[in-house]
Amino acid sequence: MRKLLTTFVVLTVFMLVVAGCSTSTTAPASAPDAQAAVCTALATLKTAVAQLGTITASTTVDQVQSMQKNIDTAVEGVKTAAKAVPEAKIDGITTAIAGVQTAVKSISGTTTLGDAAASIKTAVQGVETAIQAAQTTLSCK
Image (cartoon, rainbow, N blue to C red; front, side, top):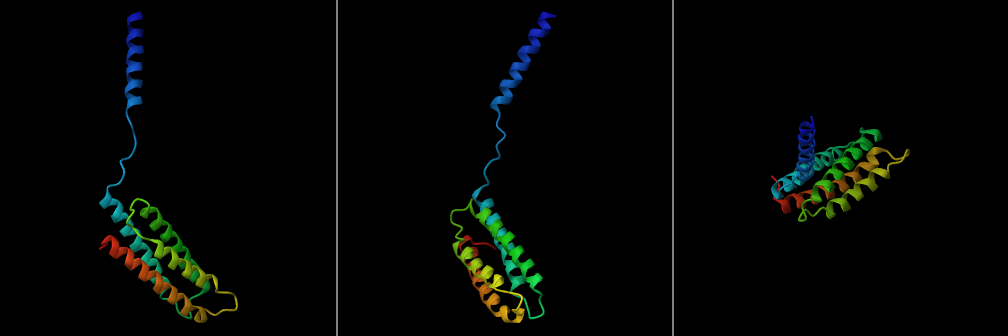
C-alpha cells in the first residue's frame, strides 16, 4: 500500500510540473494575417459609410442614427485591427469620422433630413477618401 501511495504522489507531482511548464498563450498573428484583418475591417467600414452616403430627403432620422451606430462599430473594428499593424495609418479616418459624427449630431428635430443630407454626404466623401488612402497604403485587395 505504501508503494502504491508513493507512486501516486510521484506521478501527481510529475503531472503538476509538466502542466506548470506548458504555456497556453496564443501565438501572435503573423504580419500578413494582421494586415488582412485591417483590410477586412476597412472594407466593413467602407460598406457602412457607403450606406450613409445614400441618404435622401425621405430617409428618417432614426435610420441615419442607426447607420451612424454601424459606422461607429466598424471604426472600433478598424482601430482594434490596426493596433497590430504599425503601418496602418488610420488617423485620417478617425478625423474624417469625427466630421460625419458632427454632421449627424447636427440633425435636430427642426432640421429636415434634406437640409442635413448635403453636409452628411460631404463628410462621407472625406471618410471614403481616408479609407481609400489606408487601403492603398496596406495594398488591400
